[in-house]
Amino acid sequence: MFAIVDIETTGDHAGANGITEIAIVLHDGKKIEGKFSTLVNPGIPIQKYVQSLTGITDEMVATAPPFNSLAENIFNLLKDRVFVAHNVNFDYSFVKKQLAHEGYNLTTHKLCTIRLTKKIFPNLPKYGLGTVCRELNIQVNDRHRAAGDALATSLLFELLLANDKSGELDKMVKKNANRYLPPHVNESILDELPQTSGIYYFHNKAGKVVYVGKAKNIRKRVVSHFSNNKPSKQKQDFMREIHDITFKDCPTELMAALLESIEIKRLWPAFNKSQKHYEHQYAIYTFEDRNGYLRFGIDKKKKFLQPIASFSLFAHAHSTLWQWVKTYNLHPSLCFLDRTTSANEDLPSVTFHNELVQQIIADAQKELKTFLIKEAYNTYILVENGKFYGMGTIETEAKEALNTHFIKEQLTPYPENDVVRSMLKAHIAEYPNKLIYLE
Image (cartoon, rainbow, N blue to C red):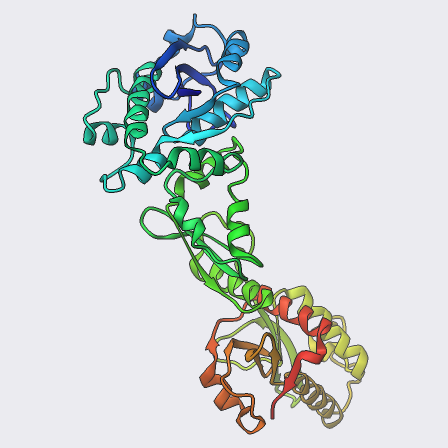
């Protein structure tokens, strides 16, 4: 038992829009059992571009019944049937939200005729309702009106049933009972995803990456994105944009997390919100003033200058410099931390002060060690002079081969960023036994 549904709306997502027209064709899998259609007063203005597309104006719906007066009847027509629509997630999200607002919980199975058409007629140029009907010689009357499109979808549905030789409809209804797959994503893509750790990419129609994620189990994580059909504009735009899914295996969760951050910074995907802030890096430099004092100063990181230490925030650099002043008993005015000191005030001797600065530099350099972090079997992360270099597989574990030059030839280099540094610092603190120090 099926209910073939088409709606017209005030806008493109259910979160802030309403239904202006609804049509339901009841079908028993062999023939049409009944029809229902009506204009609906949405209670809000219809967007101008929608009026141009559908021909439904504010004046036309002004005297139409509001959805609350139709809700009980619509719910009764749908509740015991499979909800069928062309791009079912769109229609279902609107109808479910509107019914829920009136106290009705719609929990029917869904069937998308876009997806079913792709299975049964895989070589069509496009799968919009107009193109499909034209390619399959289905007559459409009153296009972009609910009754006309619902009837056209019912004719398409009958054609799909007649050509469904491998039971695709039954498989799709059962499989998608609690799954809201994007209309442009083929079910087989999900079946091909591995159940291993790594990162995954969602691509738009042009092939551009619009989202990057990490996962302990790639298939499970990807499917979880489609476990609900929230009516928000962000969710609906997200679902419409996804046309393909690709992935990269990573031996461990840490490597997946590092690569996710690197790829977000590289690709700047539209739907990744975190990690997309610009990094304003700061550094502590040293220089000799006209009186011979070696002085520390904080500045934005310079491409061709070697810093004593680097920081993501100015505040971190400032607190580190104060820590050095207190630990090594430096004079604050010689580090630009105390601007109240008089020019005639006694300062330490140049020799004494410069020896302290040189000691601080030496101690800071000692902390910038080169080491490997051993992950899964023969996979490593290289930190060179305190900075993330890259990661990958090293084909030999012979100690004589574990020199920096050989290792760098084996690994894939990647750019470092704040998130990568933070993750590595936390991992090193938790698993110090994983470190292999190199000369």
